[in-house]
Image (cartoon, rainbow, N blue to C red; front, side):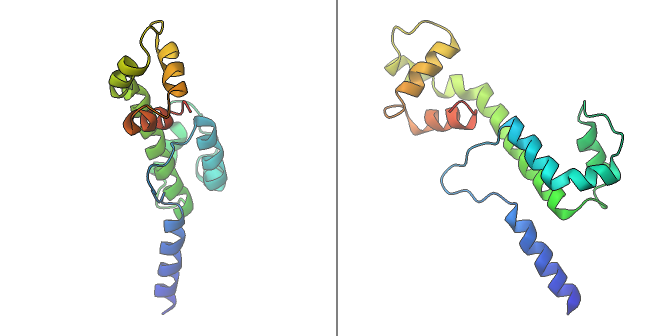
Length: 142
C-alpha cells in the first residue's frame, strides 16, 4: 500500500513538470532555461557533478550518467527544457522559409536582410499567417 502511494505521488509530481499544450506554448529562453535548471537540478549538480566544467554539455552529461541517482524533478525538468530549447533552435532555423510567403505579401519593398523582414512581419502580425506568427514566437523573437 505504501509503495503504491509513493508511486502515485511521484507520478503526480512528474506530471507537474510536463508542459500541457493549449494551442501553442512559447519556447523557453536560454536565460530562463538556466534559471529553471538551477532551481530544479541545483542540489543534484552539487551532489553528483561537483567540480564538473560548465562547457561542452558536461553538466548535462554528468546528470545523464547519474540518472539513477538524480531526482525525478531534475530529470523531468531537464527533458522539458531540452525539448523547448530544441524547438526554439528549429524555429530559428526555419522561420525564414515558413514566413517567406507572408514576407512576399506584406513586406514588399522592405530592405533585404532578416532583421528588416522580421520587423515588418512583427508589425504585420494581425495579417500574417498563424504558422508564421507561431514560428516567430517559437524562435523567441516576440
